[in-house]
Image (cartoon, rainbow, N blue to C red; front, side, top):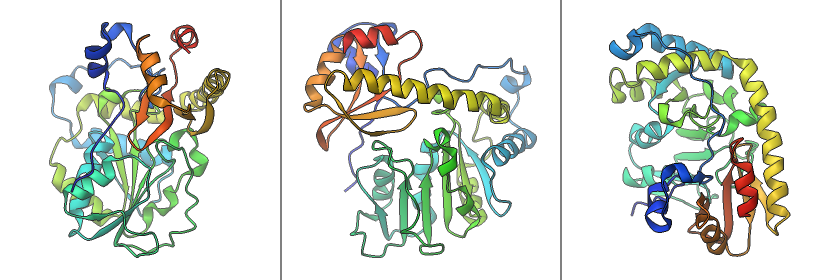
Length: 317
């Protein structure tokens, strides 16, 4: 049975229940940077021509430099990390995959839909393993000690939230056989609607993913913006510092109102609030969307407010 999917960002459903227009709401249910990378002027041809090989190579080269990708690893730009998550299980015949819970539920859903047995006992060897690092929603950092090199036919490390803590990356593993590392562009750079992500790792597996996606998988605007943004290391450094300050500010607001910080990253925070449904309902009545979880009655996850949203958020809390 394929595990149920639940996500943040369900603003349409919140509007249907609580009213208001999209412009009236502050969406704190996702982990997307509220101060996105500034969109540069784009060449006219990026909108009118099919993306050529040079544009794809340019963004891949920028990604290799930014993430310091080993030369032995290949890099595949994809139309969002979720597109890769949906296709990765088909790279091998269905077997057993270890996915420690709680974590981002799309991985288990994708493997389950492809016929894999998910969630075996950690002591039971599995042919594949998925690690979300830092974890979503807990923010837990995986130190890698329990996964020796070459231990599995497939090791997927989802680093969608790792750009806030680049010192913790496992990108050095990307040159090893069977390893795939996922990178999200939309979260740290705040351009989720651009639909850009990267799969980095074993060239043989990357080649099969590339064939499965077909030509022109990523749009010309996404390739051009991605290459420029990945080269802007100054923006990345300033953004990490700001996110750290904003996360601390949100922690202060929440703990000052009785919540207990239990995890998170520089892009979202996780709190124990006692009764998450009550908190979520109270904030939604003031048109602030947050994230609760079906497996915990007390966990509430909040993304960071944007610069113009702090006053409303504080008043609602």
